[in-house]
Length: 559
Image 1 (cartoon, rainbow, N blue to C red):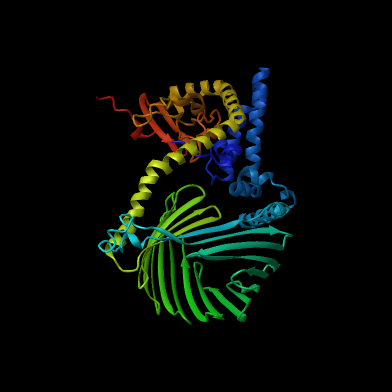
Image 2 (image 1 turned 60 degrees about the horizontal axis):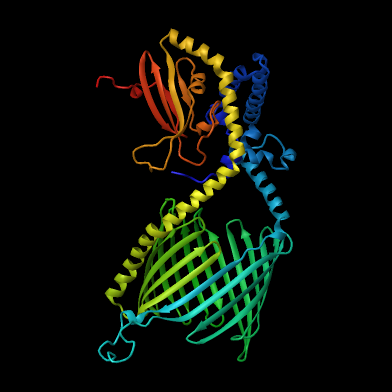
C-alpha cells in the first residue's frame, strides 16, 4: 500500500541507520560502528581512481554522521528535529552543554523569529456557513385533510434560515493585529448584516487587549473592549465590555471569566454576565488524550440549566470521536448524541441528533474544512416521535458509509497516488544519487565480503545466500502491482560479525549498500541464509529489528 512521504524522509539522511546503531546507542557503540565503516571505506585502501573517489564520498558521509551523533548537543538537535534542525540559522550562537529540553526551547525561539519575519505575508481567514432546514413535513403531515391539494403528495422541505460569517486577520507588527469580520443572516424572509473591525495588541507575555467597532442594519453601532491577563501560571481572567447603541437607547454588557488549571488536564471556569441576558455560570472541563468531559451549572435570566457532556476520542487514523450530552433547565430537557470523523487531511465530518422537550427532534450535520465550517441543522419534528429519532440516527450512518465506500475512499486513494507520484518525481534525482552511492558501496565491499565469507565458512558460520529488499507481491496484491526489489546480499554479508547479523529498528534504506527502490511504498527485507550448513529464511518489515541466526528461521526440509 502506498503511503505519503514526509519531508524528513526525502531530505534527511538517517545517520543511525547508516551506522547501523540503535537510537539509544552509547558512545562506545557509535565509535565501534564508525571504526568498522572507516576500515571499509578508507580511500587509502583503494588504488583504482574511480573506487578511490567513491570511497572518499562515502567515507565523508560516515564521518559526518559520526560527528553529529558523537556530540551530545548536535545529537540532541538531530534526535528532535532531524538534519534540517542542524541546518537552521542561529545555532552557531547557542551555548554548548545544554540539555535536550533547553535545546528544544532554543529551537522554538529561532522558529518564532523566523515566523515573525514572514508575519506580514500571513492572514488567518475563518468562515462559517449555516443553513437551517425545516423538514417537519416528513413526519408530521395532515395527509387526510390535504389529499386534494396540488403537490400535497410530496413532503415540503424548506430552508427557513441562513447565516454566513467571515473574518480575516492582518498582522501589522509582531504585537498588533487587525481583524475584519462580517456576517449576513436571514430567517423566514427577514434578514440583515453587520460588519466589525477589531484591533488587538499583545501587551506582554501575560496578556493582550482588543478594541472592537461594529455596525449593522438590525442593530446600531457597537463599541467593545476585551482584555486577557494571566494572573498566575495556573490562573487567567478574560473581560469583555460592550456598548450597543440602538433606537431604544444604549445597552451596556459585561462578561468576565475567571479560569484556573486544577491539574494538567482539568480547567475550572467561573463566568459572570451582566446585561440583556444576565447569568452566572460555573463549569469544569477535563480534556485528555482519550476523552473530553464537561459539567456546567448556570443561573440566569431567562435561562438556568445544568449540563453534563462526555466525548470519547478513539486513537485511530481517522480521529473518530463519539459524544453525548444531557442539558436540563427552565426551557426543558435536551439529550444530544453524535459522532465525528476525519474524512481527509483537512476535513472533519460530524453529525449529532438532538432530542428534547419541547424542542422535538433535530439532526445537526457539520463539516469542518480547514478554517471553514459548514453547519446544517435539520429540524425533523416538534414531537418526540420514535420514527424521527430512528431515521435521524440510522440515516446519516447509512449515507456516510455508502459515500465513504463509493466516493470518499476512491477519491482519497486517487489523491494519495497523485501526491505520491509528485513526490517520486521531486525525489527522482535524489533517488538516483542514492542508487549510485549504494552501487559504489557494494563495489567497495567486495574484498571485505570475500574475507568474511572465508572466515564464516571455516567455522560453519553465517553465510547470506540471498537477500532482497523492497516491495514484494503476494496473492492478495493487485494484478497491476509489480515486484520492486534490489539484491542486498553483499551489504548484509558485510555486516556479519562473529556469525551474527543485527539490524536495528530503522528503515533499511539507510544501511550501507541499500537504497529505496520504491519510494513511499511498504517495503520488506527477505533473507535466505545458511548457518551450520542448514538453510534458514526470514522476512521482516522495513523498520523492524532483525537478529540472526535464529532457530525459528530454520527451513523444515522433512516434507
